[in-house]
Length: 92
Image (cartoon, rainbow, N blue to C red):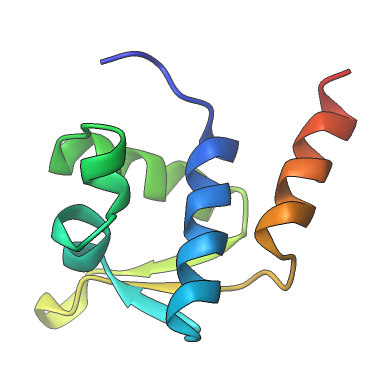
């Protein structure tokens, strides 16, 4: 597996939240769903969860794995395009 930046996954999360018009999504949908991040980047479930944990530590999302819910909650307001702009501003 090549090492992706957390920002790539954050961009994909922002895009997913926009497409489904929701503030939450299941980890299963991110791993197995149509156009899922796990499928797009050929991530194992462990790798996807690692990225989600790192993005959670950046305070962009909340990951809830209690009672088998396995949900990701959006804590940011930026669009996918704004996420990419933020990434490039910090990596010039």
